[in-house]
Image 1 (cartoon, rainbow, N blue to C red):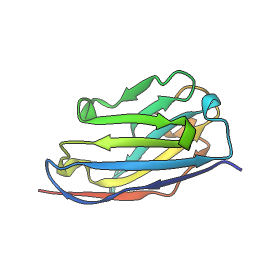
Image 2 (image 1 turned 45 degrees about the vertical axis):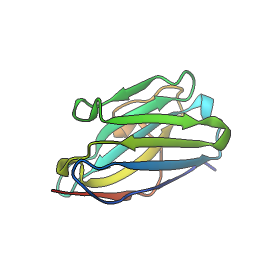
Image 3 (image 1 turned 30 degrees about the horizontal axis):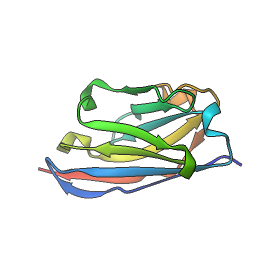
Image 4 (image 1 turned 60 degrees about the vertical axis):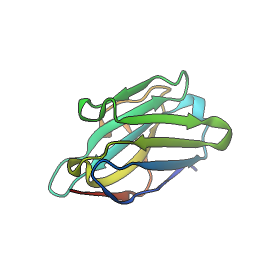
Length: 124
């Protein structure tokens, strides 16, 4: 059974940092793409970043480039989203998701497996 569990959210001041973690199980990481998504109240779910389990290729939405970094630790079956220089507009519920393709995608509909969300709140 494919399972993902996101954690690490919290309240932080603008300019601060948080690291989200996603524990994955039930599949061979090299065969899957992992995505990070966020959803703010009243807005659609947005692809933030993703990483290929096959070759570690990453993508980032323009609004987080240079501030967020996605990485994985295959030995620990963990994926991380390091978020620096956080802004109030980064406030959202963050999700990790997996798709049965070695490559990630920014589209939520490409993912079949979702973890529960973790709240990130950035105060100004």
